[in-house]
Image 1 (cartoon, rainbow, N blue to C red):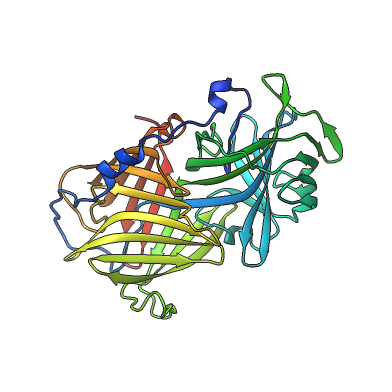
Image 2: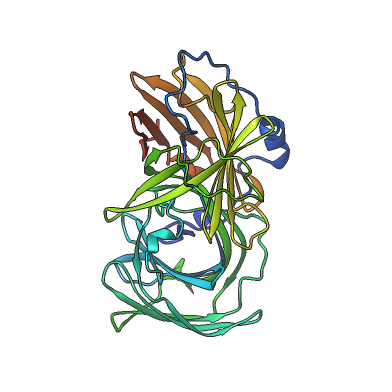
Length: 404
């Protein structure tokens, strides 16, 4: 659900229901099983000594996501969600505004943007208190947090945990975080609650009802992922990056990404690269997750094949994006427009979203357009990347654009 939203409010019942994958596993295997080289004619040498990220992949798996919708006109939805971490369970309070459906996060970390900085959603440090019974048979809790808009959100939830598996798992984001994310959702389990309440700064609010009948309260198990907007500065190589001898035995192209985030916040992350067979793999690790990009090395060229998110203590990749053919080397000028396709997997579920890719040069800038086609809730979220090269680094801007 919304960071990113399941967002059922104000919509017909059909828009509330998950769907099948955009393409079947067989179709994905036929189209994306063996990634080809792009038919590209390069016109010059690479303009950076390290691999450049033309897309920003993200992913986030929740063990429990409690969803509540009230009649407060300021908000579209609230979620209380748990994420496994080395230090234990991290609780998030998530709020989606009515109208814009822009989302924010409250989390009790000294720097909230250190948690998944590749997700460009505004956030605030606040203790998210969740107390009560949480076990395999019952969820009976009280919660409280202060959000980014200055409201104290308090409430209760009573029900069973999300144990009912869904046959159709491709869940709609229903407009949440449309400004920032091309979001795909694997909604694996869901149960409706028995009771819930919510108050704002001590004033209780009534719960909204689904189709005017059932109070909007549910417990979900879900995984979200996809591609994000971003403003990134890349610099390198960096000789002081410490390699992991068990995994990355060489660091031929180490670099650093500086993420510009809401509230004029900046977070930097270091990457370590390693040649593996005919590929170059760049990895960025934190305690919570690992990002991995893989390029095919062809002489002086690096052509992006896929990018993957692994999350702490989760077996399946949270997100995987595959390109067919591989993207041309974004560091080298080339002729014409290179066309391609992409597919997004979430939580090991293939074919959850598909679309087209266009890449070309516009004077001194590399341009990449991601044009999603299916399902319908990603089709209205195309993105455009523009990359420019300077003497000391690379600037990557990824923005939402209007559907073509």
